[in-house]
Length: 299
Length: 165
Image (cartoon, rainbow over all chains, first blue to last red; front, top):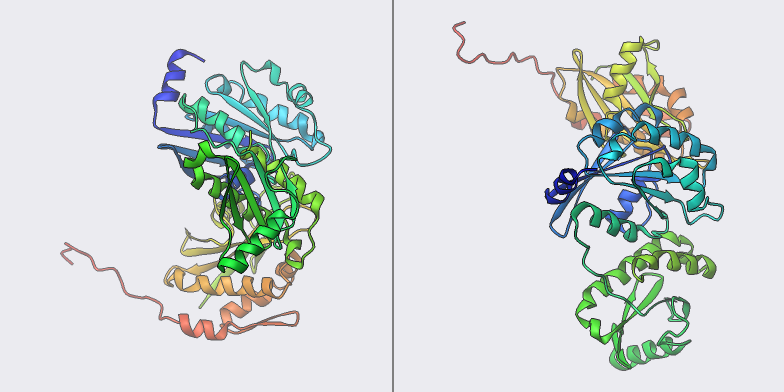
């Protein structure tokens, strides 16, 4: 990759990212996760689909290529004028690593001109290949440069982390620093804590339930914010869950972002836990979902 | 209304699938070129579930409705249900009919590849006779919809501007 290529890539305001990979790797699911903040099950992509995102003043065209054999010949044409390439691989489908390697080899000459990120998807599953195993199976070490990130387009694991890296490679600038929450806790609708990212969460046990019912009784309103020992605790409620996010008072200006992040997490949990409608909450599943999703909120 | 043909196309959600014309009625045997041409119009690039697609095909409009058929064993299949309609008809008027057929099958829990194949003749006849369609024990009421969208075919010739005729 020459200096001219790098400059051209960074200076241009409009960026084009082409997402390739075998069928059923999760390409469309990733694009929709970036748009909606949660998992949506898709039908296969017919040919290609294009979505435009505007991120910090930069217009990014995400071109999602169909992964079926019939559509793979289209990849080269789209990569020709792209600034970034993503190759998505199903990390749980070892039987198709060889096929993935063959397809990656076919576009390898184009990948010398633009950065490549390999996304090892389905890292929410138990029996996934390790990153080392994927590098070897796909022969990535033979490429001039690449980066590989494990993600899950179902739980959201590492999606923001991957996108931050892509954004930096594309534009030469960092995505604005997100806030650093101290803890994230999810409660059932009665206020009983179900899971927390911190064992030293500011709110312990049933304290939250007691505070919320006190506020409800005394002020006839819902608790939305609490200041405690140099921390601000933001509360949000969805249909079947409640959540709190603890941020340091020095991050007080990022309150909107914290609220938005918590809101998105609660929407994601409602989507992923339909059984909560019938008051059947699987705490292990919920804990896992929060752990995976919080990779986007807590670094 | 006269539809010359109904066509059902599919891109399977299973690994290793590719787009195909599943069935065509009443013309069943299609030449390779015709299949390719029709397929690119029934399931064009970038088409999504819930969308309609209207393309010209010879002297016809090819109207397609895109939908999903649920699968338990893998992700859902992508389907298109298309009709060939003479170009003298206004194609937009007929999109609600296609949608109604598919949505009713979906709502009644009988939308499947097998049902679409088995009842293609009944669907074709129902559309052309502008009547309700019976699929298994489900009645898809189309006659009212046909009344609403009924229109006279346009025989009007285009006016020639600047012509000395």
